[in-house]
Length: 236
Image (cartoon, rainbow, N blue to C red; front, side, top):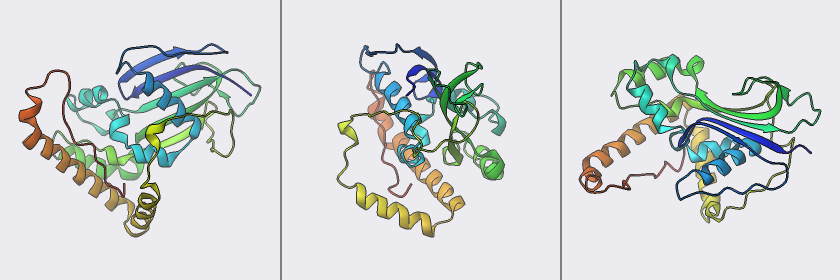
């Protein structure tokens, strides 16, 4: 069974770039609050789990680097310049040709798994263009999709485990999970994908408007933290 040897991130949450190497026995992450320890564990868990549903439940907006988004918004705002999130997990060489390739941020021949969250410009190019032509503060998070692959470029599915991992996180326990899953299923069956993206974008714009109109006065008095609205549509 291969071991994790390296993690490279691009535009993942607070990390516009990260290159972290691991030892083959035990690794301990030490740092101040908000230094990125949980972010590193989240990146590893998402890649190794190959869970599209988990990524969709978390949402693209909190996963994509806000620094990269701001840089895009301050530029030409062209669809071909939209930021892309990449998380590469390098594995110790295990002799599996399906894992081996050069499709990684280091550009080297290695074994590994990749998660890439990128805009669907081919499928929803016109919708993305329309969003970018609207309010200059708007961003097409809803038109992003996630793809899991190996460094060879082939897709990998969670039922084929290249390595075993377990993340213990009490924060993920949710008593309303079953009800949310049912609601999400009914919604996805009855609402076309394009309409879902449009509605989710509109909902996010209303959250931004609420923050600007009702929370800005409070946030202006704060230095370390800012209040915001993080509630997502239960049907997203």
